[in-house]
Length: 302
Image (tube, rainbow, N blue to C red; front, side, top):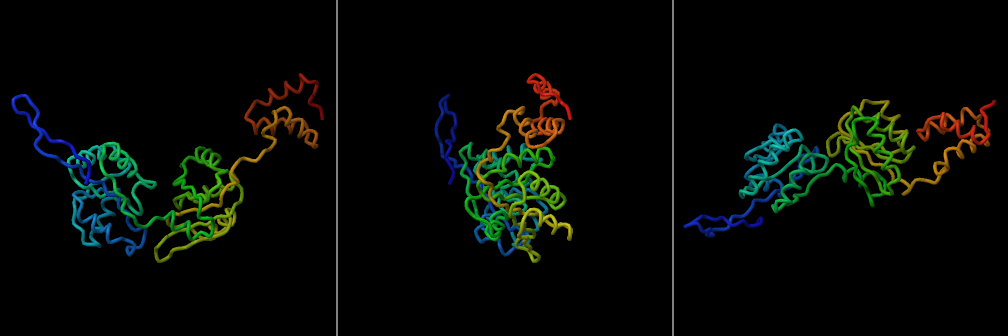
């Protein structure tokens, strides 16, 4: 049962309590990620008993409902409609209706818009109940051969390569097994970015999880890229990557830029090349470094 609100009526200008009306409950129902045998009896019951079934893709969910002979009022709730539909669904919950929320596959709220509705319902005092089931990230993790604890779930990386690489740089040293989702048309470029930002670390790539053609590749980032060159990527991927070392290694990055230039020169790099390398790395004007060298009596002579 949800929390209670007092329903009131006015008699002679005074509010008189007449009855208690309970809020509805929001059930977050996991659905199969590929194999219909993974649908739980409890989830089937929740969908049958719910006043409203909110779905990310109503056509996809209708196929699921038909398979299990579930009749119900189906309402769309996706990334494009979540603001308008979220307000409507919250109103229904506050009015005492029970709602079952599902995503296209797996748990609602994991890399999908269900997170927003759950948050709004909790803030409004509505009871939110998880109904467990299949989950791609955990399936991939336990069969990856990599440490299962601790782990970090990153979901989908940004589509923009610049934003993606910035995100990867932030996560590079996380001391936990990292789980990512990725679409087949971006998987190669994402792995290439991971290789550039994180280096070649152990990983597993899982696709078609729980389906007839389920497949795992276990190796390294570079060998996974080579594997994908031999066959066209199909289906969404779940990537499981070995942990980072916990903190950024201490390198010459901590040196003053001018000291780094001098260090390169001392190791045999010519002055022009040393200036260019450090300026690019530190994202500072080469002229600025040059002027500092000049001020200390260092010329640019070959």
